[in-house]
Length: 275
Image (spheres, rainbow, N blue to C red):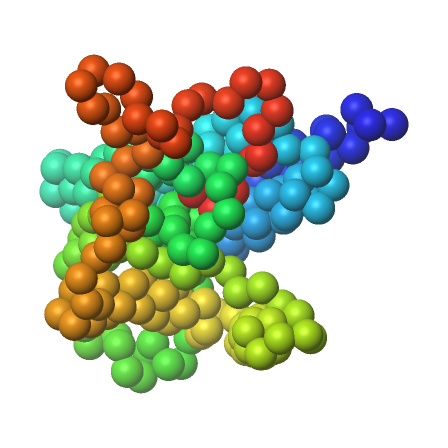
């Protein structure tokens, strides 16, 4: 029975991969709307696999590594392929380079996450999480089908905006900009109540008009990290512990690993999630 429970989080991860691959198949057929939402579904499954592993205390090193490999596909390759088919395939011969830089950044982001934050209690992410970046790109085409886009944003140079967005997302993924984690819902504390209210608002607006809601939400989350980093940089100094975390978990002094530095875990290790 214990073995079955351990497998459950990895099933969520593999369904995440299923939707990522299916999204690429659909994008190759020109079905961009469905492809975008399948990447979004992959993002929901990515959130669930980590939560299931933590709640059931069945996180393993294997699960964490599998999660990161799948995330490269579902939130790196799949969104890049979708945008290439949608926007860049009919452009110049070098247009694919924007997709390459995005996928490269997603891979670096996930590798860095594995050695700096995986398995640790997180109040924030260092760099834009790859699922957030992938889901932002994925929901772009559904957003273009809305009246809001047609009436307000259609006059903007879409092709150049997508180039800028892909480079911006790539830079933010490998940056040291901090992003808030998913709020924790609860009824006992003010923070828990605010988290619950935030989640409920996202669900309500998402159900009422998901096409018009999730892409602006992704852009707002992207901008939030930049604005927060700018304000904190202007008015506050980064503490030594925060600088050490940003620099990386392994600090070498006189040829030896410092006490408290990260060492690869042996045996059981919690899943990563939201890299």
